[in-house]
Length: 311
Ligand code: 3PG
Image (cartoon, rainbow, N blue to C red; front, side, top):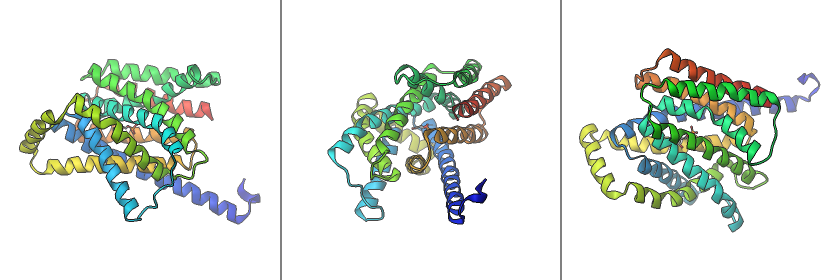
């Protein structure tokens, strides 16, 4: 079909596809590493509010340093920009903390199986809160998504209500985050990388007082000492790794959100979850019953049907 297109256009389309594939592969790889270190840290140090705060703090530090040293050009922002960023930052903070609390209570794979149900939340929010309507096939695709997640949750060996609810809250919060941030990025001069940097800084400011109120320095000091005595100095590197990789995977995902539609983004996100689910089951030797795996497979198949139906 490209036969009639000028050479240059064909080349630039191929270049764009290659660029997006590289973004996607990098995004998934960084995300797998984040999930593994995050869980290793949470197993030894069960304080998800602090680890979520540290991830945002690391991202803020990396970006403030990059701006100060001019490795990255700082964005030109006005009060209007920060005002429109606020709801995105609230949603990002809630979604991030909720997912981390979830992963501190259940297997990483279980959190991500529930999180693969995000398209269902997206449809329900768009339908009931934004008044959008979809073809019947889109609604039908929610049946395997919701059914698969429910089957997986009902047969999960180590089910925990906080873990389950954390993943559900994260789904809802991230639907809002994605709607608001795509709107906020449209027509703005701020790049995906800088947009995510500003988002990290604002989320860090929002989250810090809550983290202190919910957990606080006393618990952290005691927990930190226990973790250090059990794991040794490597524990500090695990914390650094989970924080750096959290920032990097999100930064790359925002750099790709800049280039693609929310729909392509959500397909990429589902494929990312498959890599996380499979790798975390192998690395943490998570016990999985066949019926449980079947639920996950049905839910993931549902998200693909959903993307087909939306196209
Ligand atoms: C977080 O801590 O923010 C979650 O692990 C993020 O989940 P997601 O980016 O895979 O949706």
